[in-house]
Image (cartoon, rainbow, N blue to C red; front, side):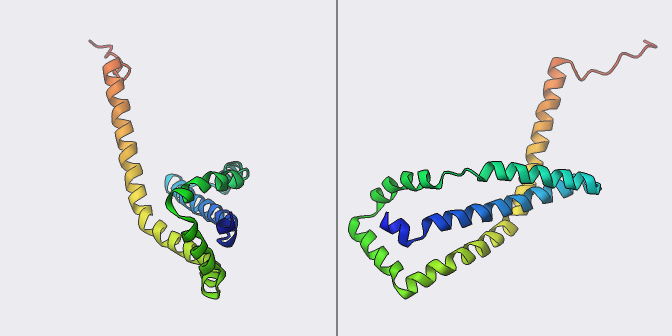
Amino acid sequence: MKFFEVMHLRAQMQTMLQTQQKQVNIMVGDMFSKRMPDATAEQRKQFESLMSDMMNDLFKDYPIDDLLRDMVPVYQNHLSEADLAAIVAFYSSPVGKKVLQEMPAMTAEAMRISYARMQPKMEEALKKMESRVDAMANAEKKTSGTDSKPADPKK
């Protein structure tokens, strides 16, 4: 627990959640803009309200304390007490404190870079997924006969 305290894991997790929330908002907002490029101001407002409500519901009760408790055995499996003591000593030093202080900004920058690189790939994957789902739906319609055209009354 001293390790978690020195590492400011609670604050890091809260920052990570806020950053994830912003990234998801951007990604979903981009998808909305691409799907509805001619959306009215009212539609955009409704979408933003919907997204805000959804994100608040998703992140408001995130169980950080429970997650920290769940992480204890993970760290115990991978690090000895001596390892943890050395890590605590480092992060208690001026350089370690600086690393911890700068880590949120470095992580946010890295996530922005990662998002910029991944966004086109995610869009491509979503298009492929939509295409495959459409193909599955069309195949289902053909086998169930629900896609049949109305009979020609002349025949």
